[in-house]
Image (cartoon, rainbow, N blue to C red; front, side, top):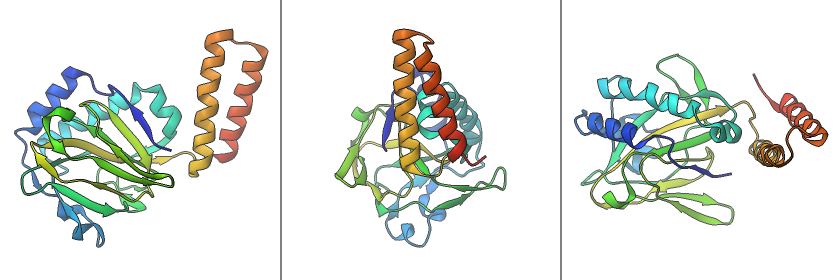
Length: 227
């Protein structure tokens, strides 16, 4: 399941992020790539412990907490500390690859299973040419290029790439989610049920049917959740 969330960051938050990132100490992104990805990875990243990264991570995590749709879709158990990358000039693309199944979070020392991959766009789509996130799905390739402040989440086991940026720079935040519910099919079922319950409550209030279906939702979550 691929989900797009608009306006996760406000325009003021995007401007603040860009003011820090435009002055940040970018370095080659190959330093964090695995043995497969290092062959096709050609971008820039912020050092994890630099001042800009430390300042922006709490802002991104707080923005996620404001998004009930994000929680409904991802059911997050752990969030990998957000990182930041940039594409443009000579460091302008990332070929087809699959993200590592488990990532080590340097802040906490925890190992995080990458059930979901997330990209939070920090450049407006009109600022650069190219730079589409291309995600391979069973029905074909999905191309994603969103406005600044918008987020896309997609299955962590997907083959994906970022196409070459031929004008300007594409700046983004990226991170991974370990979900309470490991299986993507179960997460998608729970998400669909939660959206239907929200619509039912909006239309009919807390009817007997809404209460019964809410119980079914939580019983399924109780059955599948890993806490």
